[in-house]
Length: 369
Image 1 (cartoon, rainbow, N blue to C red):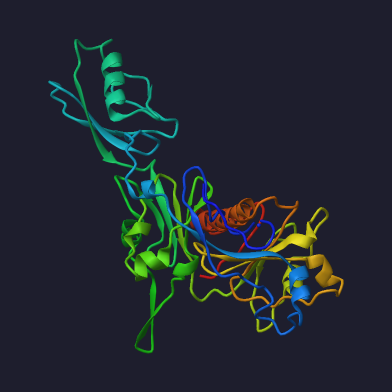
Image 2: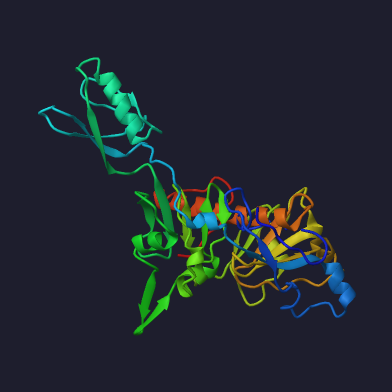
């Protein structure tokens, strides 16, 4: 489990799950504190006011579990869309090409349909031989895997060819980005401008955020971040031109808010149509910085709207999270926030990739192209 160190009193919720999960174990180290008032012109003039405004603030560094840097040693199992060649030895007809249907079955010769979804190639071979024995004497079958469609990974965002890619064997993050044509670039006035925001890129696995440092991996060659992918992993690289602020949690319309010169906490929440019943206003979180090493500050929003504390000036790509209940640990609070954000973006981007007219069923966080 990833652990979040805390500085003042208590723990946080945003993009999806920047920390420890059963599948992403690691550890954290303490960094400099994050004061949400530091960038604002209305900062409290005395230390007691700042203390009353902040419940807690900290920077979290997440380290990947070294096990993620090794390919998963599991046998391949068939699924819908996978193509195989089946050959019955000594059969003059030679091999027959077929595929696993949407029902998980293969249809071969006189067989009415064999359920092979979830079987290995050896298990499928044994199943075919057993059923063919009703028609042939001592049948021997050879199976060759010709194409994989059931196990794929998503590579979306600012790559040259975003889309779904078959996971035909061990594949790392760098290999997936290369398979998608590399990072997208724009040639303008004779210069090349990178359009990928590596500090806010992320990997989601089974609905949980995996804290890969994409900037360290791609810009600094830190291969300790080059994890192996698993089926259905979602890799997303946002645009560096995006400057929105994201408002999530107990608000009427969770959404992104266009950044302007002076966007404050109050105005951002107002753009989300305000808070809803049950919102915990005294522990509103602001997440800032890269996803693998975010800074987290928690403020008393109730006192701000009552005029007892100054408003907070926000920065591009800040994540504002209004909780429904008090948090017991900074670790769980941050975990909720990061998982919420990354799952939302993954759902939106994945839905639009499959259907341009896709309408998200719930929270919608638009992402700049």
